[in-house]
Each structure stands twice: as structure tokens, then as C-alpha cells.
Image 1: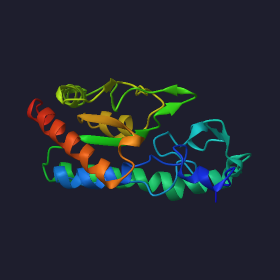
Image 2 (image 1 turned 90 degrees about the vertical axis):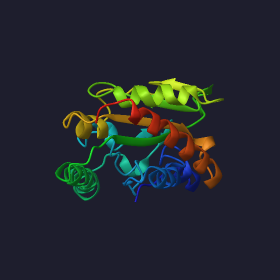
Image 3 (image 1 turned 45 degrees about the horizontal axis):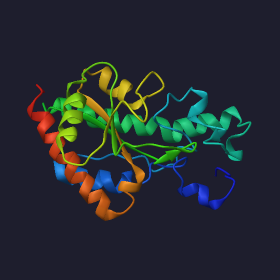
Image 4 (image 1 turned 120 degrees about the vertical axis):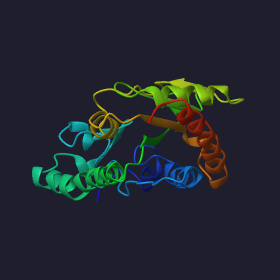
Amino acid sequence: MVALQGPEDRDRHIALDIGVEGLGQVLARELDCPFLRQIYSRLVIDCNRHSERADAVPEISDRTYIPGNMNLPDSVRRARIESIHVPYHAAISRMLDDRQHQGRATVLVSLHSFTPILNGSARPWDVGILYWRGRTDFALGLRDALARQTGIVVGDNVPYAMDETDYTVPYHAFSRALPYVEIEVKQSLIGDPQGQAVWAARLGTAAREALDRIAL
């Protein structure tokens, strides 16, 4: 159990990607694809970080102390890695292996959400499209397709830029030469089922346009 400063912190962006579970479920139905999610809070262990990075088990997140992670014994950290981090990525690998063995073309999509304001600064984007190395064609196509939709402010590698601190996409997509994208949606837009349905439709439409423009 991770001890936070208050119960309300468990529902903040420091603990989870708000709205992503619902969005992912609807988007998976929209695109007829599997959806794999992590059920543990990133404050227990962040599965989008290499397990040996210090920030995989953060002691402070967005100016909030995480007492349950302070001076964590190595045995406890190892237990979290073995019981949460390793099985999660093993499940992704199995899913990708199965699709490869079945001869099914695959795009890896990593879903996240971001807080509208961070450190007092407003973030103007509705959605951010993140990419780095490897097969960026799908990500760029998705970015452009979203930008063609009316009334959407699309960020290009913002509010975060994918880099060596990311783990899921580099580990699974780069090594397999898969097209990929990491999507960040503003939390205030997907905080309820209605918003999740709207954004699943928008992302689904854009994804189909992007798929039509790349070779799988």
C-alpha cells in the first residue's frame, strides 16, 4: 500500500491516467482491437519506465510526497517489479507474438492522459501525438488526420516528448519495427463516458485515415 498525503491524491493524475480506461475500452470496440491496461497505480510502479529507473517508483510526484516509496527496501521494489512490471510487459509481448504468428498487421497504440494545468501553466492542446524513432509513419498520419478535424488543438510531441525515459513503445515497437503512436488526451475531455465516446470516435476516424496511408 502506497501511503499518500491524502485520500484525494489517489484520484489525481499523479496516480493514474484519468479517463484512459473508459476511452481505451470504447476505442477498442471502435477499431475492433485488443485493449490491455495496467490495473495498478503508477505510484506503486510506473510500467512506462524501465524498472531500474529511480522514477519507476517515485518518491515525489508533482510536488506530492509519496511516503510509501521513501527509503523503499530493495526487496519490496523487486517484488513490485516481479509481480506488476514484468507480467504487464510479458502480456504485451505475448499479444504481439500471437498477432505476428497469425500474420496479422499490428500498430502499437499507447494511451495516456494529461492534466489541463501543470505548475500553474495551462496546456492548450486537446490531444498530443508522441513519437520518436522507428516507424513514425502511423503517428504522423494520425497527427495530421486529427488536425484536419474541426475544432481540435493537436500537439506535436507535446505536452510530453517521447524519449529514452519512455519504455512501453521503445521496448515493444522499436524492437519489432512496428508502427506505433503514444496518444495523450486532455483529462477534462475524457472524464466521463460521453467524453470518452466522443474521443474514441475522433481517434477511431483519424486512425483509419492514418492506416490507409501506410504500408503494414
